[in-house]
Amino acid sequence: MNDDVSTIYRDRFANTGLAKRQRVWSVLCEDFFSKLIAPNSTVLDVACGYGEFSNNITAAHKFAVDLNPDSPKYLNPDVVFTRTAATDLSAIKSDSIDVAFTSNFLEHLKSKDECNAVFAEIRRVLKPGGRFIVLGPNIRYCYAQYWDYYDHYLPLSDLSLAEGLRIANYDVVRVIDRFLPYTMNNNTPTRDFLVRLYLKMPFAWRFLGKQFLVIAQKKAS
Image (tube, rainbow, N blue to C red; front, side):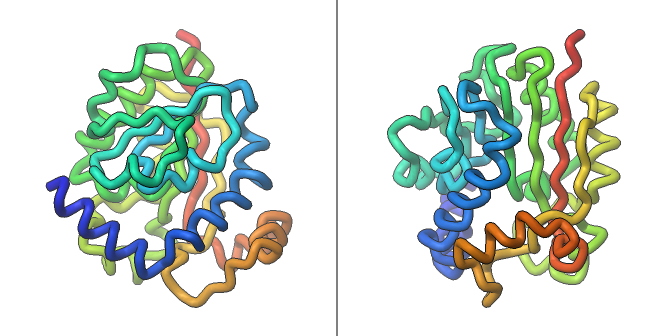
């Protein structure tokens, strides 16, 4: 399984271009996600991939988990990495994380039960009031392309994800049904100034956005 993960993502990201992904995520973190995450936070990047988020977000302490054995080679020295499934975050202390983040991951889980297990583990490691930020493809808007990836199993919309998080005892504090385009693995322009402009123009999200952004909060009790 680990070899499969390594092969799939090496091939897929080679097509996209790792430098391109890092550049885009540098802008996303600086112009958008930094406004959601205080610089003194302790952050956990769940299914971190090649560290596009954790390498670029500003935080006091950064942790990352993934099953991909190639991930550590791409992470900055200030990111503490553990090779593990998101259903087993035993390496992370309970009530120790201010913000957990994941991007384009939940669709790779094979069942709602597995997704619930991820929700439970993330809730355990979050501090009371800590936030879980989820970015992913919205099946409502990308159903035609969703199954083009061999490792997609679990279709989620902004509505079903929000409902699942509430059932898992989170408060859902923000839902954007259309945020980013579906993929960078195409000819869509990604120059820095265009990404910055896109982030400042939410009306454009209504036409181009096919990924949801959902922010949930661990209840204090």
